Amino acid sequence: MPLLCALIVGGLFGTSQAQAGGFMVPTTNTAGWGRAMAGGSLFPNDPSAAFNNPAAMAFIDKRIAQLTVNYADIDIKYNGDAYDYQGNP
Image 1: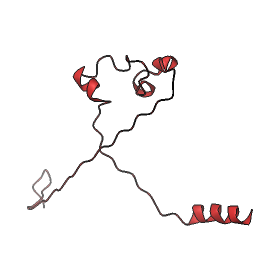
Image 2: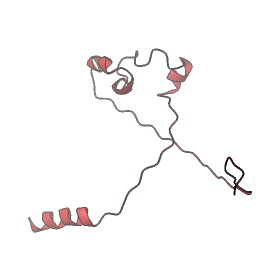
Image 3: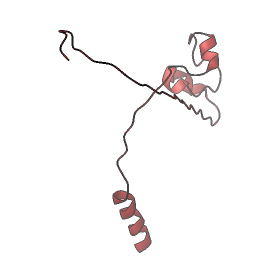
């Protein structure tokens, strides 16, 4: 019991601040791209039904998971001046 309390207190106070930012390409999968996202979640056991067509979730008959990883290697370098709409720096 003391170990459990120590783990809980350590978990609550020993964590750092987390901030979220994101870059998301709004595509479910490549099949969706091919259909131009028309008819999403028409395939059986499609986990994207939770977002695209919640009624289709009634037809999911097994455990499924979907993972999306987005990577953007963005390197922006700016060299110059910035002005507002009135020409002021």
